[in-house]
Image 1 (tube, rainbow, N blue to C red):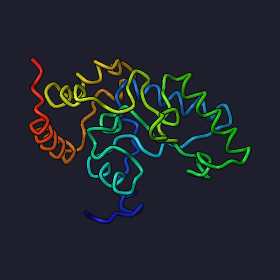
Image 2 (cartoon, rainbow, N blue to C red):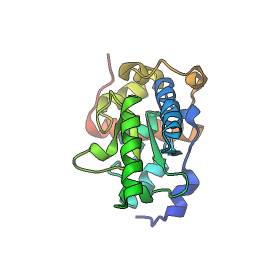
Image 3 (cartoon, one colour):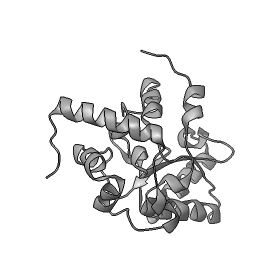
Length: 197
């Protein structure tokens, strides 16, 4: 198994909010604006995630997702946020300023229709926020929808197709499509998953 570092991960991080599903982009934009207005500023650290980055995070034990298929970031339905100056520190720090910031950020996220990874039972993902109609991780059905019918079909299924028009031209980078389709077909064959009818 390859050895990875944080520097390897940082090279692959994508922060462009236009990579999000239209509904997620709308909610994430409101989230950022409301946090700023409430004096709890955030920086969107990551939006969409490739299979390569998901594998690096898994190797670094930062995620339970072995590849992109099992993280909502891959589908443009999640963001990771940090403090603009203190970065990740406020997510784990016991100091009162961090506790206050965390509380305001999480409350605002929920008011924007986002679920928080810090609420998960088995793996706490403190900086993670995702579209609120989703389970913590994508299901086989999510993968099948993406592979057989495209990203718009998945977004429609979860209610994230409507929203900010700027996101409607979403197209994953070519390496994500090539890597993803090949990985999906191998995984579906190994699991015996059939195409939707």
